[in-house]
Amino acid sequence: RKENMGPFNETHPFENIANGLNNMVLELQQLEHMRQEFVSNVSHEIQSPLTSIKGFARVLRNAKLSEQERQQYLSIIEAESERLSKLSDNLLKLASLDSERHPFELKRYRLDRQLSRIILSFEPQWTDKSIHMQVNLHEVTVEADEDLLSQVWVNLIHNAIKFSPKDGTITIELKHDGSGLLFRIADTGIGIAKEQHEAVFERFFKVDAARSREAGGSGLGLSLVKKIVELHHGTVQVESELGHGTAFLVKLPDCQEEPAS
Ligand code: ADP
Image (cartoon, rainbow, N blue to C red; front, top):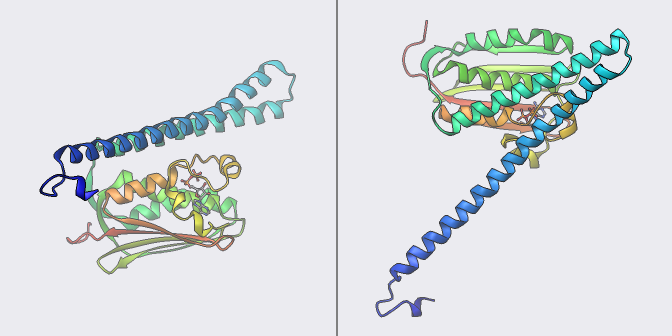
């Protein structure tokens, strides 16, 4: 093509503009595709709890039911409403983080204390499944948005419990690591196949849609984890083999100044 470019073998200015426009069109097409996929995922996630809420409400109104059945159906309606409200919370948070409008409140605080509180708040869930919880937290100070980071720990701990069998073991570690800090949570649960390691951080991704729905998930938890960690200049990684448990590693920059009291 070069020989057709004119006397000085220079790129014709219009050719640059045309290339630029073509690239823009391609990008816009990709964005439009992503937008359509997003809307279709959201609709799907809204549709399934709504269908069961409507269905069970109808049964409650029409059928002759025992008190036990009534209570059971009401619990399903409650759980599905909870799922919708979690979905809407997560979507709003992602949208606000994407748009960079989210008010970032950086402060220095003791990460080990935040983790202890959050781990303790999960005690009913892990004891319910007779899970052995092994925790080893070193004293670590971070400079971060405390509310946002709390979402990271909650989502990772929640998943570890959710995907662990009865009598499983969850190990949580926090320590300094080179120039940063390392949080590691490992479970002895079902594991994730290598081919899916990257995909688990994508929005709406679920390894097993039916199982995840049963457990109340909508595939947004890990994408929020990744987004929040990256906004704090950190990284998140998964180490896992199918059937052999899963570990998530979060690395964050260390806080250089003296420890928070
Ligand atoms: P969900 O709300 O469906 O749990 P997440 O974004 O938190 O969505 O996780 C995405 C998928 O990654 C889950 O549906 C599950 O298949 C897989 N996953 C996440 N954490 C674990 C874990 N600790 N063990 C096994 N699979 C996991």
